[in-house]
Amino acid sequence: MPDMKIVPSVLPADFSKLGQEVEELEQAGVDGIQFDVMDGHFVPNLTFGAATIKSVRANASVPFEAHLMIENPDDYLEEYVDAGCEMIIVHAEACTHLHRTLSKIKDLGAQACVALNPHTPLDHVSNVAGLLDMLLVMTVNPGFGGQRYIELGDKLKQARKLASSLSRPFDIEVDGGINLETISHAASNGANVFISGSTLFKHEGGKADCVAKLRANAEAAFTS
Ligand code: DX5
Image (cartoon, rainbow, N blue to C red; front, side, top):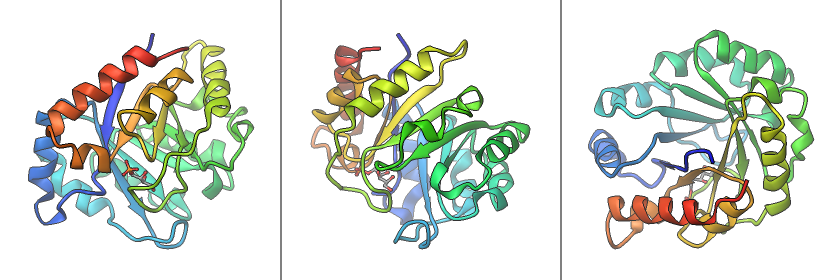
C-alpha cells in the first residue's frame, strides 16, 4: 500500500504572513506543500510566481510542489525548480509536446507530474506514464478553492490500474473539494496523495488535528 500523503494548498493562506503559514503547515505534520500558480489565462484567476515560492523556501523542509495552472509552462520550468520546488505539475491541456516537457522537468532534477482537468481522459497520459512520478486527477475545475468535489471514481480506478502496471508506480493525487468525507471516496478509488485547502485552513480543531483525521480516513478507505 502506498503512503497516504496530505499536502495542503496555500491558496487560503494569509499571504501577508506566508512564511509563518508555511512553518505552521510543516508543524502540523503535512507531507508537502502545494503552491497554486495561476496566470489568469489557463485559469480565470491570478496568484503568484516563482519569486513568492522562493521567498518561503527556507521556512520549511517538506517538499514543495508547483501546480502550474498556466499557459506555456515550458518557458517557466527552470525558475520553479530554482525556487526550490521538488515537484513540478503541468497540465496536459497546456502542453503541446507533453513528452518533451516531462523530460525537461526530469533533466532539471525535479519530479514530474501531469494534471488532468475533470473532462480530460486518462488516455492523454498513457504514452508518457513511464515518465510520471505522480498523476494529478483534478476533482474540481481549476482556478479557485472552496469548490464542490466532483466524483471521478472510474477515472481514479483506471489511473491506479495504470500505475500498478508499471515497474515504478506513480503516485495519484487529487485536488479540489477534499474534506473528511470526500477523501474516503478518493482513497477508495485509488488516490494516495490529497490536496486540501479550505478544509485544512478552516478546521475547528486546528491544522494538526485535520491532517491526522484526513490521513486516518484515507488509510481506512484506500483500495488499490
Ligand atoms: C483549484 C485549486 C484548489 C485548491 C484546493 O485550482 O488547486 O483545488 O488547491 O482547494 P480546496 O481544498 O479549498 O477545494
